[in-house]
Length: 356
Ligand code: ADP
Ligand code: MG
Image 1 (tube, rainbow, N blue to C red):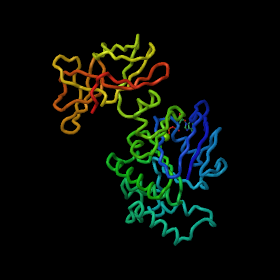
Image 2 (cartoon, rainbow, N blue to C red):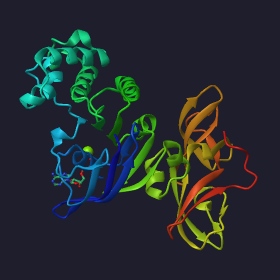
Image 3 (cartoon, helix red, strand yellow):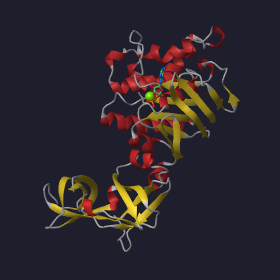
């Protein structure tokens, strides 16, 4: 099922939760809405589900304008963070709920409902839990029940709002891979809301980065990391050190950070340099000027390192054999510069060796 949203605006008093959001999804696509708390993710999802309504703009699902279509007739499955299972209902009753509340003429016969529930519990791999109650199963299992319940109405569009928040780290990884697999097997279209970039990058075909009620960039995970459109996106995604620069006569002087100057053919003015850890080389140096704050081994011959220089922490990579407190030197190899005039540029130190 395709989804198309145009110029959505939603205000709550003086707060604009959505300020002109446009988005379109192909059939079978998996998109993540990623952004900090308060950026409008849940509001967008609720409008798609028919649980909230925009002040302006258009929502089309499978080509049809759904402005006047109530939530339960949209054929959309929704899973929220606190997937609120009904505690007084068994797992099977929870899953059957969406079918049992249908108006009589749309409601399947009881045997049919039971058959569907069995099928769904098989699909989410917990058929043996049908008679248990929510407080008799684990968090991961409750998450599967919530999904089965959302899928019971055979939605073509699945909306997930921070659905893994209550799970611990390992279960969370397993469940999200499994959900992505399920999305593929069923051939549905899915939208996942999350503030966890790793989750968005791993699960989604494309990621929409939201900031203050707007989508600031919509791209594949790879493209977002390679070519962030704004300093906000660069800072929000991946790990990066952010260095403020002052460019004068084509040079940004970094001596105050204990670093070599960098040459940039950009107009004079303020800028910000974003450095990914692999763009920063940490090398041993008896004389400093930097020293090692934290070391995390990565494989047998590399380390991820936080180094401190001039009161500033810079994240980079180096060889094995560094220890906390050692002195070192920092070489910047490449980075992304966001100039105060709104333009962005890649910078590479001339003669820099390929980064590894
Ligand atoms: P997110 O899911 O990205 O954290 P939300 O969509 O929940 O963000 O909220 C976006 C903005 O709209 C926030 O500033 C929030 O406080 C505001 N907001 C959301 N829902 C309501 C509401 N029902 N009443 C008033 N303000 C709201
Ligand atoms: Mg939210």
